[in-house]
Image (cartoon, rainbow, N blue to C red; front, side, top):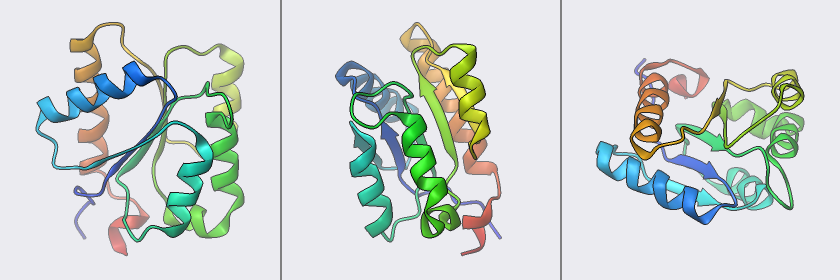
Length: 143
């Protein structure tokens, strides 16, 4: 079985500037993946429950106003249908303390990254994360 490489990248963040820079990085990297952007966890849950797409990954900020990233991850883990989709979930956030990192890893996540401070570093970070998941086998590779 081949890894999934063409599924959309789901990006959840309530910061407009971060959306701009991530879209720009994905375009400049020439990634074939469509980008599905959300500013809150609830619309992501609605999307995941109704889509037939097989997202490559979910990149999620931890600090959002209505439903934060930790709450979103807990909702996904609590829903058997969403849990079985086995979409890699990576926290991608501006900053986090040790408590948030520990709390995040109590759930079923596949990574925790703080956003780079320069655009070039951010672009390299996105390239590394996406390249890894494009090459990696996971349960969605067999469906």
